Image 1 (cartoon, rainbow, N blue to C red):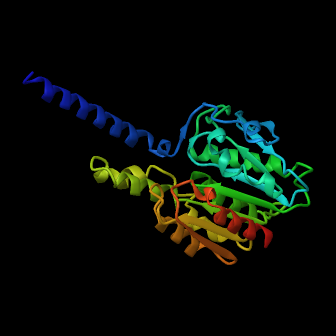
Image 2: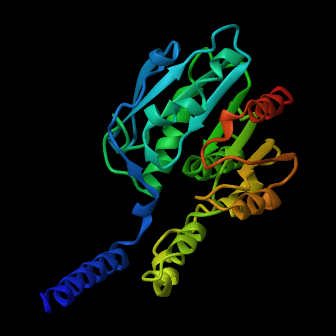
Image 3: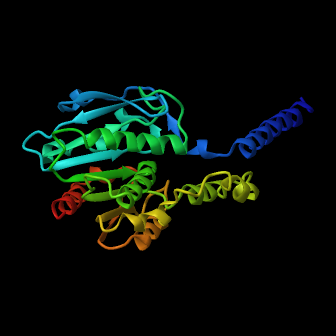
Length: 286
């Protein structure tokens, strides 16, 4: 027994060092993605009409999404890009209230999430986000109506990159507004921050974060969304993406822009009726 504890410790340390070596060799973009294939709830359980949508990506993957039509004459459409964990069936509550407010909703799973094929990475999920938007703009129910992009957490980072390119390329139809909820200011920025929180990875926070592309840092891209209005939402109690990320994004955004300071946990904005009203007011004003 006297020698067992040191051996266990050495084995554990060797395992940790092997994992760190693998991160150094392959990069650490995988830390952004935690998909699963569990079905937590379907729209019909929430008394919502819906349609399963399957889309083929240019590189051969199949994406699954849900189309949720507005319950009455629609005011517009919201394209929702969800956060990094689980899949659409766990994130649907963030937008399940919108059809009652007369907004269509389209929500997709990135590759590797839910019923979508493949394995996620930054480049792939960016392509997935654009694939979903291109399908959406071809729908008759969407044309000639306001179109909004709502991105939460990881989805906000993907949405910022997508919206900035959409505006720069003068794609049609134009977006009428972009809403970012609990979004980090950049992939590399948040990776370095999270690596710095753990004593074992603290010395490696810089080299490991440098393995992540810096082409899509949201704080560098958000200014390109103008003149499309931007709403940045961030909670002072967000324990996953600290509040200063929202502040940085808002500061980097060009007018017209609006900031909504909230007081909920990460990904819980829309449990508060007042925050829903603020978003509806933003969309109604565009």
